Length: 145
Image 1 (tube, helix red, strand yellow):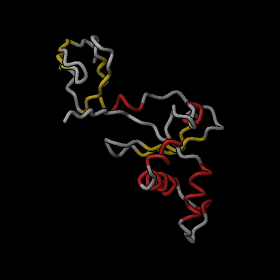
Image 2 (cartoon, rainbow, N blue to C red):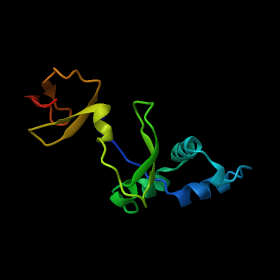
Image 3 (tube, rainbow, N blue to C red):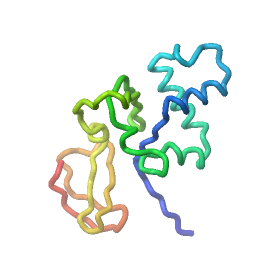
Image 4 (tube, one colour):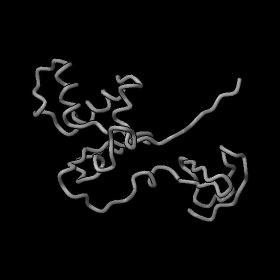
């Protein structure tokens, strides 16, 4: 059997209204307005973990429901303590401040010059420059770091 494996970096967006509704369904004693930033982020991660595939569709940036504008604004709080997930609370009513691209401090982006497939490598040594594309199998020398 042949399997296709696609590794993709996905941005999920959970709106305040969606999180409030999820919180109310849990029937917690603490009011939603009393949550700390850390509790707010934990709630979003919990909602992500307990959503079905069809429910997750409405949270994917670039999908039918979520636009780029919903992921831009002033970052109020963030958790970048783990390598595989980055969580931010964003005030979309406030202007975004210039900042680094989150992905680049975690993984190295490698574009294949043969098939235009882009793959990401965690903890890649900056001096390494010989790569094999996982999509087309071509070897190439990449000068970018």
